Image (cartoon, rainbow, N blue to C red):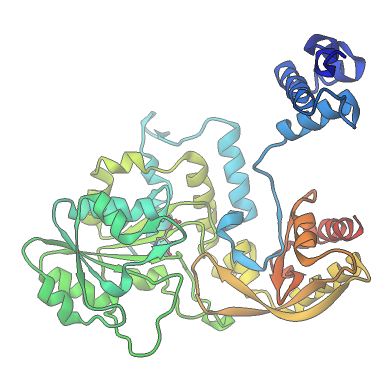
Length: 451
Ligand SMILES: *Cc1c(COP(=O)(O)O)cnc(C)c1O
């Protein structure tokens, strides 16, 4: 008997079959050829049989998978507003428009129109940051991790930087303060204990080698019980008296006070600046609600040192970031408008009845297997740890799908719907579902339940 694998069609015979030939055009020929080869390889591995779905079905399936982008929009039904894995902050309308304009054409990225000559990219968000935070000067870099690296390199390279043991934190996978300090060329001097650090601990560690006193906001966890930390104003004062600089990494970049909405405990950037530290570092895409960025604001000499450091070039921000950040910051000139139009702030301060109405609409759209239950949303992004927001969850039940399978089907939908598992149930939190996504979310949930 001849080996059935020898009877497999050739690549060329498959490529001229009309259904397969029709795939060239919509897809690049090279991709179709690869899909044909892969389908043949698989058939050879399986003993030489024609695929169950036929040759054209097998090729089309492979092609669709190969052509699909991996970076796609999803509906965030987790209720975690700043979900780092889902892209943190979504942008306000004016920021999206500014980003598109920067993408579509040439711009004044590093061009001074008045002089008709080269300008500086560092100029763009500077005045707005100065205006909104009360700082003397500002610089924007790629992200806050880069900002801390740049600050320490510029101010403490080859010298010592003192940090409290209670603030040697790791933030969101792979950003560890001690590691970043080591890379900056600063020597880490730890003071105090995990739960308590006093001003005298800093005083005793201060030597002529000390270049920076660093304070890090414990973004993603809380310490409670017998604790003590030194506030930024005292650190700033001590650093000044000792001839060192002070740096305060506040993390989330909150520009306006949200205590009236039950969100307290995060330092605002203006308050951090007012404490008198030389540099405040924060993220652009956490509570500020802008694009990924690291923002440094503070005293003119400290910002100038950052700007002149060779690392500034390595961590500089791109034109899309600067365009989106400038437009986001401009909204803060009217804090109420910022709260309404910046999606992160809008979601965090949305009234629970309004969330409930969106939940009702979603529940109705899904039908019988959905019910509305009380629950809690999270801020996320290491901001306001321990604070939760009241919400209403759409709970999905299925008589034939287990929880994990239902969740997997939701994630595999088009668009993918990312649910949360809550007390062994699949739930959708309308807080992070935009009003114009409710019907798509309902359809996606319906399709997942029906399959
Ligand atoms: C989130 C965070 C960072 C890192 O910010 P990125 O912009 O993600 O680099 C650094 N420090 C603190 C305190 C943070 O909360």
